[in-house]
Each structure stands twice: as C-alpha cells, then as structure tokens.
Image 1: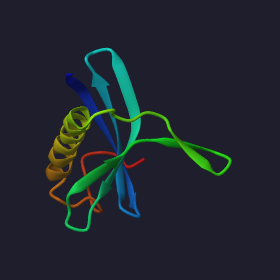
Image 2: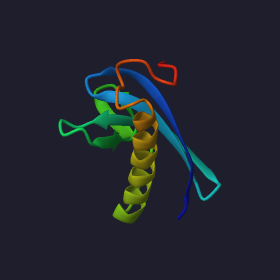
Image 3: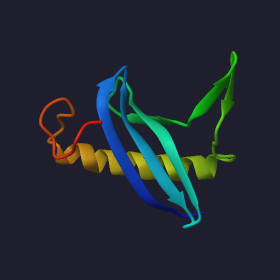
Length: 100
C-alpha cells in the first residue's frame, strides 16, 4: 500500500483538535475528514470519522490492519510536523496558513 497525497487543513485549536487531514491510497482511494489531535506531550494522534445514528456510532472508514494504520498515521503526522514547524512552532499565533 502506498500513501500518496497528504493534505492538512489546520483549524483553530479546540480541545486538542488542530487539523483535519486527507490522504490518497494507491492513487485510487481518497480518505478525508481524518481528525488530528495533539497529545499532552505535544505529539499527534489521529481519529477516523464516525457517524452517529440515533445513539449508536458507526465508523465511516478505518484501516483493517495495523500495518495500514501505521502507514497512514506516519504520513499524516509527518506532514503535520512539517507544516507546524514552518509556523515557528506557534500554532496559536501568526502562521503562513489560514485557519478554518
């Protein structure tokens, strides 16, 4: 599996949420609305989208195995690190991207 195009859309930080990500897998599948959160230690974690029907949540999509999950997570985290480093490690001040 090849994780191709990775796009990060930063958002105004709220409850740890700092961005939404999208990736293209094997030039065939687009996965979007992947939430990117910061952990207390400053690292990142990702969450895949869910829909709630009544009181029951359903996964929209998610990796089936740990190898696939790790490749997607590493690609997103690498891109987030690059993007947020360019902003002088200040996600809350002036940046070179527009907050949504």
